[in-house]
Image (cartoon, rainbow, N blue to C red):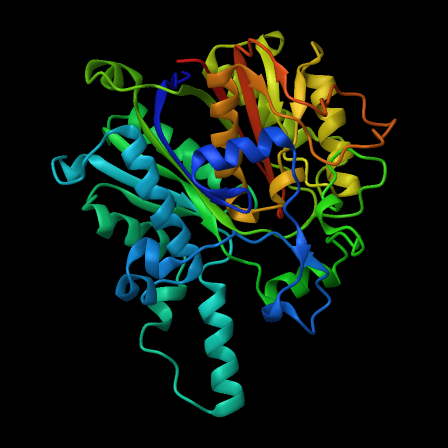
Length: 407
């Protein structure tokens, strides 16, 4: 038996290299302005050539000095995004039944900023580590701290499926609503892995772009000259409710998550299956739970990392599975790769695309790879999307796909 998904997206919150807030993010995405810049002092001396940082992020101002000091950067991002998402949804945590409110967030790396800082302090100076180290580093604290801030005492989970983590979290949140375990779920993901150790690992394996002379143009999904991704940080939070409940309370519904699918390639520790069989399985599962056909899909927000192999495998899979030729975008040309949080930001962008009837462009696509036979616009396209998909793929062969429909 297939359980049908009908989760209303009533709130969005974004903290990404494209800005703090939904409006600034959407403006940058539609303008196709890359955000990568030369490395800052924290990454100096590493092999990391560039990164995409959240601009002007002042946690003390946004959260208060004392709360901010108790949180790693990845948790700070989530708190700020959650504030915006709940305000956007018109929900007040002071009046809700917290036992019916869940928090499900995706993350791949945990609190690496504080972990690396404390490890250096221990090795170099022999100083004892902070008593807050574990509370700031452990990945589950991402959801735990959001729940604490908003008195959400329902199911509380952090999913870890590498760069599919946030998409897995959103799918899990949908299931909690479908199974009547929750009435409201705060979901999405957050990541702050632009750190010396994590980014050096990606650099050593040859995953990062080396376009040092033009950082803003380095992330170029589907371009013939793509040579790797640009590491990024940030968070995306969505407020999900059952669509019937959202309508009953008169909420604005931006769009609906109507299907999801996941799979494992069971092929390689880092590389996707060469024929994209796992991704195909996840796409077909998402369409099945949505009660939709391949020809119903009008837009895909692709995983599109700007790595040679990933983009080619994903494009060929989309061409094979969705023969109708929907518009395909990769917003990583603007934001870089948010890793475990990528699926959250991209789910939000997909919701906005459906809501506004506007397919976002793919930044820095100057020389379309002739081996990639899909329709990738380089400017915004007004389009009655109908049904959209957003794809995520991760190390370990993880695949997760969401299907998004109009309100």
